[in-house]
Image 1 (cartoon, rainbow, N blue to C red):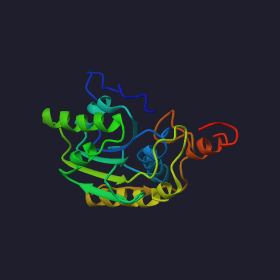
Image 2: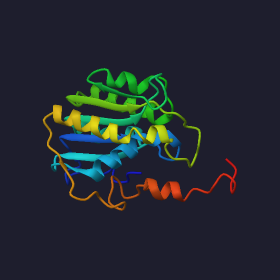
Image 3: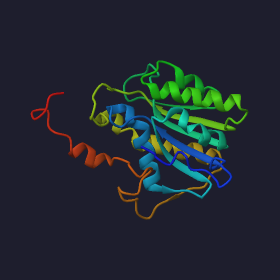
Image 4: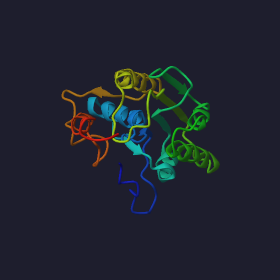
Length: 208
C-alpha cells in the first residue's frame, strides 16, 4: 500500500515525524482494512501541521520500524480482536497498546506490528505517547470484500476518537474546506473504497 518506506535523509537516517498517525491492515480482507480506511478518511477530511504524518502502513510490519522509532507520538488505527461484540470500538492509550496488538492475532500484520513496538522499545526509541483506536471486526474471511456495513458505520466515530486523542496531545488540526480527492489520500496506491466496492462482481457472476 505505502511504497515510500525507504524514505530517508541524505545521511541515511529515517525521516522523522513528531506525530505518526498509522492506519494498518489489509483492505482486501473485509473488516481487516478498517485501520487503513479510517486513516484515509482522517487525512481526507482534516489537515495537519508538517510535523504530523498520516500514513497507510498496510501490512508492512517490521518495515515500519524506522518510522515508529523516529516518532515522538504514535496513533494507531486498526481492526483488533478485543473479544467484544462485532463493530464495537475501543480506545487504548499508553503502555497497554502493545498488549492489545498481540492478543488474538487475526493476521500476520498484527504479529509484525507487535514486533515493531517491541523492537522500538529495545532500541530505546519507542514513542513517548502511544494510542490505539480499534474496532472489533464482524467478518474477515472475504478476499476482495470491503468493510461490513456495521464496521463501516464506525469510521466517523474512529475519526472523532483520533481527533480527541490528538487534541489531548496538544496537536493542532483543521477541517479541510474541501475533502481530498480519491487520488490524493494516504498512499499513492490507495484503493478508493467507493470504487473498490462498486468494481466487485456480484455474487451471481463469480463464486466466493
